[in-house]
Length: 79
Image 1 (cartoon, rainbow, N blue to C red):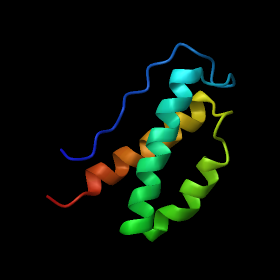
Image 2: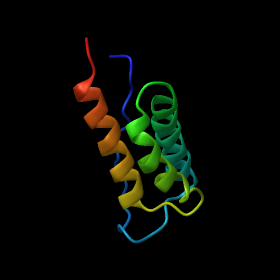
Image 3: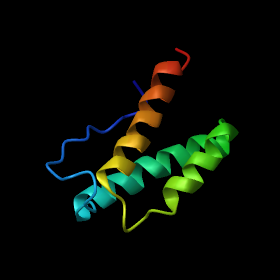
């Protein structure tokens, strides 16, 4: 409910860099992971750091990976 997970619907090859809108979405997802990692889930810090190195040159596979991590966290959340 409280954690919004964006949908990944791009018509790009996995090896191509995301467009500006995709890069913005990627930064938003990584920001959510960073917030969770720094406040309640320190186990996310390494993955978040790894994803954050791809700012500006993220690919569809990077965005998909970040969204999957966010979906996994949402499914594990306590109601």
